[in-house]
Length: 242
Length: 118
Image 1 (cartoon, rainbow over the protein chains, first blue to last red):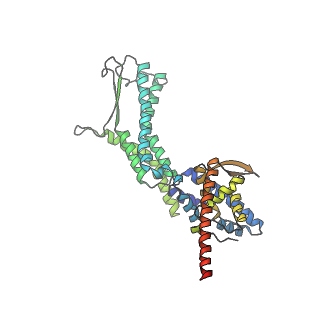
Image 2: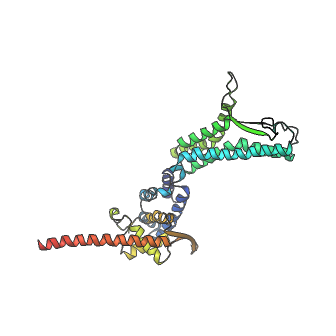
């Protein structure tokens, strides 16, 4: 990609233009520039003169950026509604993943442990038993869902060159929800022995001196989620200073 | 040679009108559209050539244009053509433009007439 287009891309993304629109725009501009260059060379200019004449005919980078930025329907959802993309949507994705994880727990309980009081404590299964794989798959979804949702937000933030505020809000929100969550299951809670699974959200125990497991878990989740974003910001800072 | 760009204050809606008119006749890609505008207006209307793409994308987003990718001489081009909604939009824009042009022409002729009789 020619250097002016690299700057234009950054300008458009930072202004909130959706990456797919930016990609298409720059692709067409690059083709157009190639056509202009060919035309100018055909008119007898040297390669260097043809390049600068072609760039001048294409328009100034500021004008090219301005025309794209002023059309609101090219704006990404991250720019239009960051509260939804970094607040509501991640929470809904996390909830959906947990519904799947809890369904796996409940169905595994019904299928593999029909008489057990709870589905937890499946230590009597061998490593490669279908039951163990089934339960561990559900557990993996439950524990990794907050991290995957967080990484999704990080990818969105990086693609859109976003400032840190909204991604930080979203990551903290998901880390707190993920860290505070607890799953409880019992058969006796519901008449008929159908089995009952519920989720609680506890950041710190109410008893004095209790271990704040939820807070620690949230901090661990946050550090995993935020790591790629921090690396990207550092890379940006290094490339700007170079 | 860099052509002098047309005063942007007089250009509101004009690229859209010209693009729809050109594409109603045949499908074209961006570079062709700009050259066609330059040639058919004797370079009276000249815009930064890259500025045509946000207009094309906007019209496509509104459903006035459709695009398709085509390989021509080993290069991938995006060709644009007018949809039925685009034809209706062109008719409306042309009507508005003709009314405006007539009104301005009348106004200018009126001023000349007033000078001539004073």
